[in-house]
Length: 193
Length: 193
DNA sequence: ATATAAATGTTGATTAGTCGACAAGTATCG
DNA sequence: CGATACTTGTCGACTAATCAACATTTATAT
Image (tube, rainbow over all chains, first blue to last red):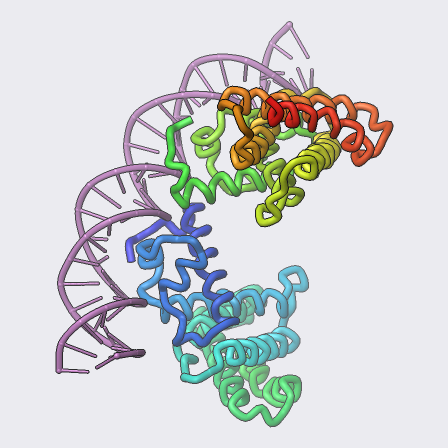
């Protein structure tokens, strides 16, 4: 894991190639059966190059899942729509549900690899929510209160979706409908203070 | 134009990206309107890298056209078919016709850029014909006779196709039918001697 | 016409990717 | 059990790609 410049065109290309190769392989075989050798063979890269960017295939999985979630998020929350409030939170929940279903299907879910994957999801949710709250500029709300609320919402969403996905006894829409008032009350309280 | 190892994976990738970018641009604008800057922008490569591989866009055009002709050739002359004699020569002519029509359409043919392009075509035709004649092993034919005949055929083909493409008053098949006996007589003579 | 902008071709310093090799771990088979 | 083969993570030497800068030339516009 050499230190590299994240903006170097070569670095972006190489990572893109590694991740695409990895995604392609995931469609064909189980994660545990994929070797680093497989990945670089398909990407036509040297094996040492892989280790310049990732510690091992587990870290690659985390990074790749974070990327895929970013795509999912972008498709559910278009930038130009400028969503806010309840509609934004609802969409966030649906995006996480959709992504959760897709990735567990893709990984054949033999292990609970979820923990590391959740990291990236929570961080991205947190970012979207913080951006929104920052724009809203609630009265009498200091930065720490905003941060706490954003954290509560993002962690809550991931929590209920993980719980939901284990059994999936209701639709994603129903889950979002159920949970929405609770999450909105967190925001309402922020504006009331 | 630094000297580079043609087998280095990075070199193959870089050239492929430059050529693909160039081909994409040719579909959008005239060759003369394409700058080196355009090419590297689209390929997300540094401009200096371009000059490691090509002197200028004209040399890139030559190399790219040679590549495209190699593809055309491969599709008209499948390796496993192991064509020989009249059928091979006929296919060669049709391949050149097809390629000539495609590339002139692609380049909007405002200039006679053909000369440099012909270089690669003739060389590849010559290679195919020589391979075939080598296998046939005609009696009493020394190497120099084979080479002369291969040159005559390859240059003849390019000549008649360039002439034909200017007006295109007959189909490619008709042209091939017309010219075939003449070309075959060159080969027949080689075997008779 | 002249200024402004853009493209060209080249250079030297830096960084990333390639290659071959290594020791160490771990399946797999006889 | 031992032999064989494969994967892993790391290393140093080498080569290619990036970047910023430069002097020139070529378009574009005012």
